[in-house]
Length: 67
Image (cartoon, rainbow, N blue to C red):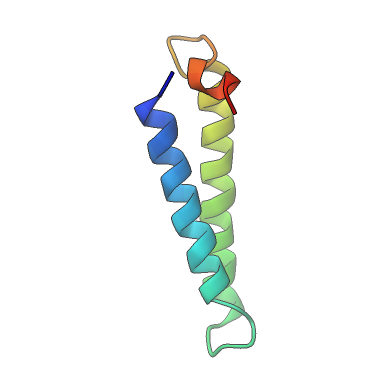
């Protein structure tokens, strides 16, 4: 079973992970940029966890059981 909400949240998380990888400390980007992306990533991960647990009218996401 697919869940469009979960798929979209996971896509956003993947994009943030890629962005975080691009902001490596070896590059010119500062710690502030990395910290901001990391915070967004943590917030999104928490949202995914919540959706998996109670995202469908207070019930677990059926697509989360497949993973």
